[in-house]
Length: 130
Image 1 (tube, helix red, strand yellow):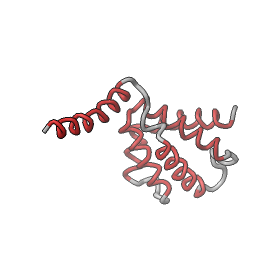
Image 2 (tube, one colour):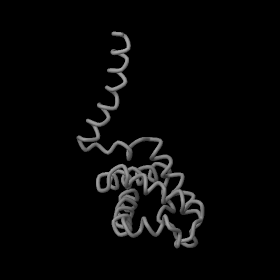
Image 3 (spheres, one colour):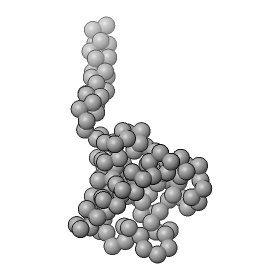
């Protein structure tokens, strides 16, 4: 019985630590390496479909990762983990070639459009060093 109690306490301790860290304002999801790599992959796929100039054209892999961390961190600070998940959903839809009348794109733009454009512009300039 005591053994089960110790096991239960150890199972409860990890989420409590994560919640405390999140409550302290640390953007957890945004700096997760898997999240960053997923965003970079989706962004690369989307930008490869664009005709003309792409904001990520000419950025090296480290610069694209830096841009992703900047975007994801600022987005999580402004809109929480739920906002980051919606951003990843948007990038997934865009990377598959969705048209701009797609419901996911419309909903995202209504809620976050202006903020996202500002954030991604600033983070892209920062990644370029300008």
